[in-house]
Image 1: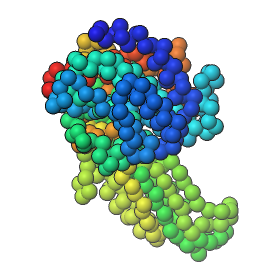
Image 2: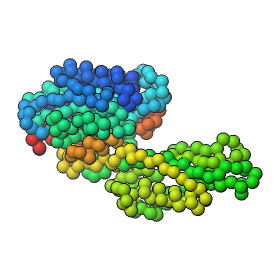
Image 3: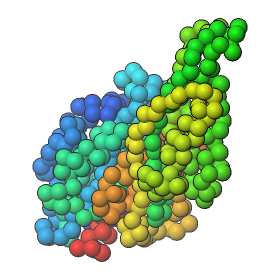
Image 4: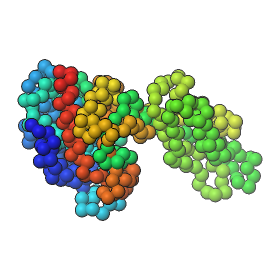
Length: 393
């Protein structure tokens, strides 16, 4: 089968699928309509489906060699709690919920790729597990792994695409090593002693301690950790006080710590350990106490060298080497859970084009994609699968 011609044959269906998913977004673990639509489509291809992690869907395609390698292809399903500001006809029908990260496109590309690969089953030297994952935003991948998605049969490698507005349409980002950040989410409660703003000497002010924390922790990424190690400590929420003339008892700071390198507990370069120590020291200087609630939410996606080489070769043949850029991001992606278990690669599919209005950042209420890039994504998935079996089965 001529793959590009097959992809072009399904262009209208591909766009229609993406627009349908976009119009009916659902939050993580609530992807009920989405999962049903995915199941029905896969079953129409003759594939047997199973539910994993509630709303997750998986299906196995057998090639001509059932004893060959098993490749997992993954698409994420969940939307975000954002009120869409786009006005096109297929804008979100669900108030306060929006596909603002491209997961609608990921599902559409994967379904059409599944259709083409099913038609090519006799040419496959192995087996493909199509995985539609719920709740990518918060650890849905790990739950699928815990429930056995990588077993029965055992998965040997995995591949995923992420549509990406920081990269222009017609280009892809492929790089070995870390390509998305590890992330810890923190909440710090700074405790003082409340009082009257007219005589602050009688109180212990957690507000000034919090202000100092916000400023001083920035030295972690500029002075305490090598500038070669990308680190971002960001505060997204500051909460404290009830009235303008009352010094509060406590202030709560919430935010994220992201880093694009390996750093385990006790590691001198672990920014979260540095953060905890520095905040404690600052609070002590101000006579305040502090408590921490820190959750490790995602590891870095680390692209495996051989899988990255394979993806690079496929993209080079499709697009030319000039259209491939080495790209990494401080955003997080829970595809990292698959990367931690099997050789994997995540490819960034550029979608930024002014004429399509697709230059807004991810998670923006006006985010959209350049639909012309969808066929490129399908072709990358199909050719990537074929190339994997050529090399490793």
